[in-house]
Image (tube, rainbow, N blue to C red; front, side, top):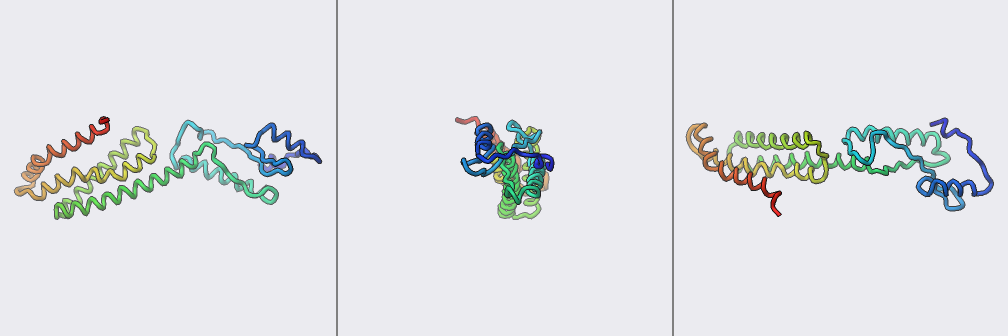
Length: 219
């Protein structure tokens, strides 16, 4: 970098040299109003960041930090004469990286709030702390399974996925609460209560599952 900035430049008493350079590179690389040089742009490409891929937030942040450090090096050398460096992401990879961080945070917060609300609903419906805790564990297992499946399929965490993860607890409690309430209100031994709960609510719950599976096919 020091060698690049220390390279000798041509000097001219007129603006013709700057105008020729401006006409060659265009306004994207050189800012010139005909009298005064406004800015000079330097394009730097990352080998593994291109317009056809969307790497993870952690992977992209390594390059983001590297470019920031590069800008700091420019500032140390040329800030007094040229001002501070302004970095622009032409392919919006760093914008997508920041959005992924927001999506991840909102998905975790939404799922956590959903589980807490589900726990309150289960306590009111079953009046049993143990059943409510076990039901919430079932909901958490569902959330983890869905997140793991989307990861295995190679899906990117976007706006739709973040919203779906947030409402996933609400969909899960819709089935769990019926079975839990039926189990809590049945009498007999533990095995008999389980059989009665599945006998009473098994068919409605399976019908709800089938309805939700078929809903995307409806037009």
